[in-house]
Image 1 (cartoon, rainbow, N blue to C red):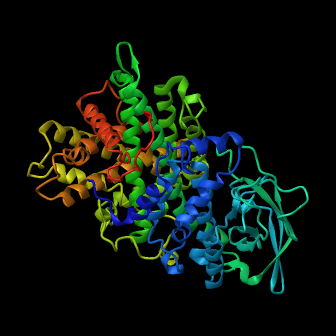
Image 2: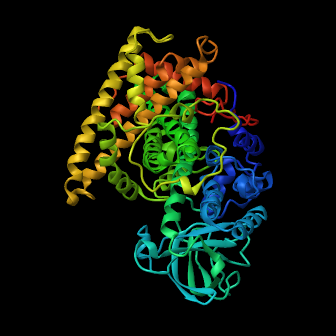
Image 3: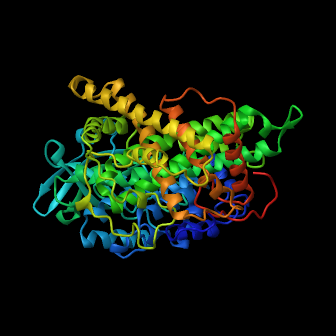
Length: 615
């Protein structure tokens, strides 16, 4: 498991470019991230370093003249940068968020204009939310009035990123009534301030233009250095050719965009969790308490292993969703919602739990004492709000539960190609087809990912024993799989009953069902990934010296993930004291730490340490 798939080559190059995160002299260091956070200033040096490395071309799809081959590549870049500084990762990620409607539905001229801006080191803003309406896009009050070949935009966009230094914005405006009354416009915002300066709206009005001005930077608890603010549109005139897609198609394009960006947001959360787990593990290995290392305390081991399991589950769900965007786009509406709710939610909870391991140190901001945990904790909490908060995401999931239940009941679930979504090292051409908006859907009526539990049950019940699995491991996996399938059937019955009463559509019960469903969906993803890894390893199995590969082959990885998900879904009681499986997971975690690899099954190497210290 020490090879890096071609899809991760760019992320590996970026990690090497950023180098040691503990070296305060480097732009990508934790020290610099904390200093910018304390001063609430934009991490311009880090963003500039990433731009000089060439990130712009990796925000531009190959079909539009760039080098981005697929969503998984963008996801890995998000994870690598988020390990250092979520503020910088989200600022550059917001460029892709604002550009995606143009990549999906924009004209060739619009695509060329956005590509030029990104390659020049500029920033984009996605101007959707409003002060009075939040995520209720259909209720937005910003209007677009047609006058011959131009549109006049009036209104205010608020709590949007990069507004302090954006050179252009993708803006939603109401041009008609109802859901078909939203239109997206690509508007230039010339004379953008230097992102290394103060992104507040200048008192003299410089950096603004006729018909618009930037609102002051908003103070935030997390992402303190972000240029989050707003745009006031007071008669901004744009040409009819500045409409992204046809007038009235804005909501559909936004929903298509969110299917992609919700998966990328999960990469931000996983990057933050990797750093926090690495810090907590390093502390637990060296800190002595009650006559021994903190790591030997059962409550500490439990928190570390649970966070590791959350990371493994998260990357599995996200990897499948990334590849589905290209190979099974009809599944993406469901997979992206599951990823968006489950991964930031679990990452945030895991970081809070790891804070208990660090104790008072989890609140320190002095770079000499605590490299970045407290900042990561604040910043990661914000990821649950991006591209739809938990209620928005769970509402979207709740609407799909009854059709999914019906598909399972009637046997109408197509699982062709699912193993490829979870294969360990995809071929060079896998997932590289351009994103095709015409193949995308706004909802899903079957869940081929959750069907991984059925496939796993069939394999475990087969006539031949599975190589590498002990009888005890085989029995536990069968028991876990059976309980998870039973829980899924029970959830389907509840969802069907709720759907029969329209008044239940937006109740707490419906949202609770949707939240539970994400864990069962994730269990199916883990089943597919384990089966795909076994098939790829072949009869010879992995090298014995590779701890991670061994943990995968002997069923330990899958059992750990299914245990964690079953507990979160209410299928199993709270985890008991650590047992042999937890000890194996902790050994794997320590092995990855010692080999300086990402906490992952991908074998991703991290930049070498050139400074002294534990963390």
